[in-house]
Length: 152
Image: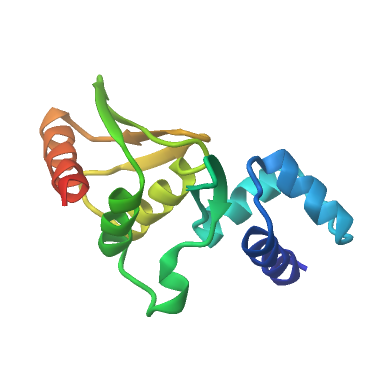
């Protein structure tokens, strides 16, 4: 069922503009899939959907990598940062990334996949990502690495 639902999600975001998880849930219901918000959120993260501008509106889109070989976590971060603006903030031992709505999950999944030692763990919302670091030095190293990727 998960594979069928995710295939339907890919089809939907290619066929029509989907701006929110609620719109995605409604479109899935039209196709006979019932899914909770948590399930849809996980599907968005697993499919690494991003928000991109289409006709002046931010909508979910498939990552460009689907036509290419599966990239490493670091390469995925590089590609995401090329397409999505990100703001970095430190808060104690957390590095906070603020980005476009719907993009935080994809960034968190790519960072988790990269398995950088500076990042102890991630928690992603819709447009905000919290990255836990073991100490201030790890936070500074992580911020530097991510800012360099974001700068291109």
